[in-house]
Length: 151
Ligand code: DAT
Ligand code: MG
Image (cartoon, rainbow, N blue to C red):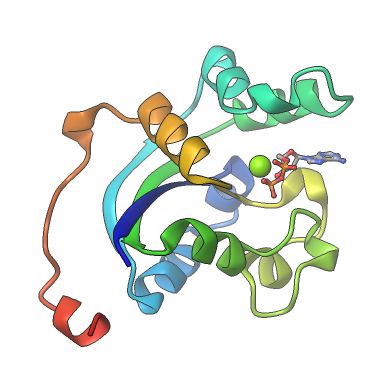
């Protein structure tokens, strides 16, 4: 199985609530590798592009306003199967329906305050990484623990 990358964003509610550490810990503990991270307050243009698939839906304006309201912790994580695995770690969109043990299941209640975004496919991962990061902002490195994580 080859390694892949996914885009993860901790939304302003996660940053405001001091949840960056606990959330990042889950990805690190799983064995995934952090290759890019920055705090950024997105412009309406960036937020709208990021959520373009939802343009026209009743919650779109509120979603963009929320994302632009404060810093977002934008990240790229790498590893085998990381795109699908991150979605499992995150839990389903509505936090009250997210299983306990998932990030949304453990830390959130409302769909509009569900604290974290994760790419849902290879195509969206590539597009979102390119939208949020310049190539030089991504670090290529080899964790010494890799041989204890991958067989
Ligand atoms: P996900 O973030 O799990 O990929 P999505 O792509 O369907 O979910 O929606 C993007 C975000 O939009 C979601 O994290 C929160 C918000 N959202 C989705 N459905 C909503 C709804 N019915 N009411 C309010 N906000 C919603
Ligand atoms: Mg989505």
